[in-house]
Image 1 (cartoon, one colour):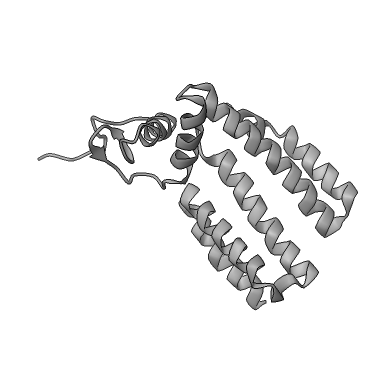
Image 2 (image 1 turned 180 degrees about the horizontal axis):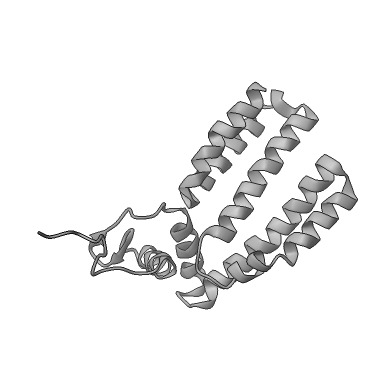
Length: 174
């Protein structure tokens, strides 16, 4: 009797997968971790972001940290904008300050993982949605197209972003 335990001999951690896939894309070898062996194990958004940066800065270990540093800082800014839009500038500043020093938010910056970029994109989606709803810019179809494209790209970074299509649809219905 033989039982498969699901452990592959080619196992690698998520961070290693993201780095190698981004490196492969930057080198023009396709979406793979091993040259010539295509993969679709994770969504392509984060490796594409890494590959873009690798083309400019080289495939160095500090590049994902720079991307996450930018995304984390931008998330604080969008959090400030979202808090200011919904509850006023003091609330926005408080929310941004709490996020800036939140331990997991700070810690995740050093990891080659998609969470920080996904958090930035999702916060931006929520902010754009609230902006459209609060300013009655709903008549402007370009705002909705941009929101849809942004949400689509967010879903390419982490598949969980697809759930927000349903959440935003429900919010519109309510």
